[in-house]
Length: 302
Image 1 (cartoon, helix red, strand yellow):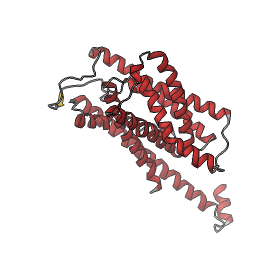
Image 2 (cartoon, rainbow, N blue to C red):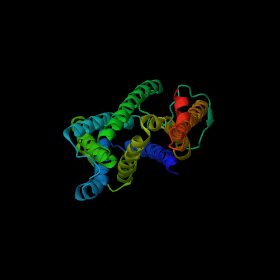
Image 3 (cartoon, one colour):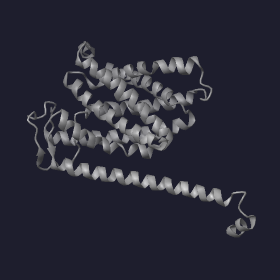
């Protein structure tokens, strides 16, 4: 049961990521800037994690965690800087749910589809710009996973790292937003669906997703976590067709089959690797058992 927990946790993180993309698409279509959205998501996610930082860590003084130092804070600052770049880039391409180089003929055309209302540029320019931004996002995510894993080895307190990370992201994105957004009206949030979507992005799409991902990084490493990234595309395709009325193309079907095949191949390979490691550990334990004859062990060594 415990061995399956990282898998279940990452599936939940993928669902949180995809629904976060859908909520991002909603609020951006309602007029919220991507820079302002990054500030609000970082601020509300910091507030969501504040009770843990205050009561569980500061008040009771977790003795099993080493004290936080300037070097660890600087590491988290770099992680947050990379996360801010990836966050703004991800919000920019938040409407791009289907990532294929070949669309092919449409397989399923919903009645609600009448052209994307979020398409501001020409289709060719959208493909070029979207591909470039997705490549940048993938690079920042890879760097983020590696730095987060190395930081966990020095400071194994997942939620505290996520809390400081969200605080730094808020400050960094606020500096960018204050420069890029000069209109005060772009910062307004009313009691409507935009506020609900922003709160969902902050609590579920940011605080919960990053906390789960960080927890899995400390137990499985960056390879296991990164292989769930393509799976999010498949989930996004399905949810986009079901809830947003997107067109389901033949290229999307081919891409989804390739992604699922590759995903299960990696999962199968990881399972075989763990089994071989466990069998090797059992054999080494039996060969060095005190009940085994010493002469037999000596002959095997020779």
